[in-house]
Amino acid sequence: MSDSTALKAKLGLDIFKPGGEPHIKIKPGMEKDPRLQQAINICPAGLYSTADKGGVVLNIDGCLECGTCRIACGTDVLEWSYPEGGTGVQFRFG
Ligand code: SF4
Image (cartoon, rainbow, N blue to C red; front, side):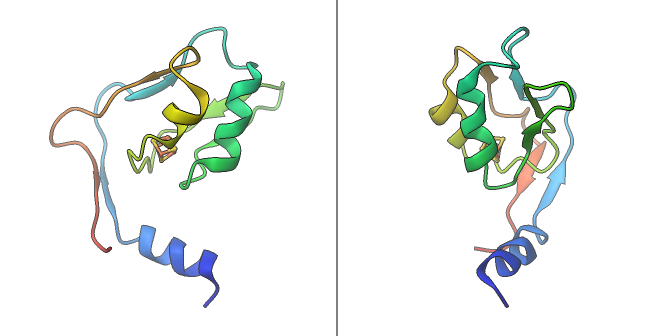
């Protein structure tokens, strides 16, 4: 099993309980900020991607709450908080 496949298998064991509002958002108007490109490369869950019309989009489903995107991109471009209590990721392995 490759490292990538093993990681995906482990992540697949986690449970995600959806909350109300997304706990991380790209600030309005900042979708094309170059700092967000880093999130595409570093988010371990692969939740950031390039939009069809350019810029970056975030699909928060499956967020590991690791904070990597917050550190890499900064709070000028991201609104970042933890999810409400009882929601979000439940780690099941490792
Ligand atoms: S907190 Fe971690 S898993 Fe969640 S979006 Fe940011 S980098 Fe990805």
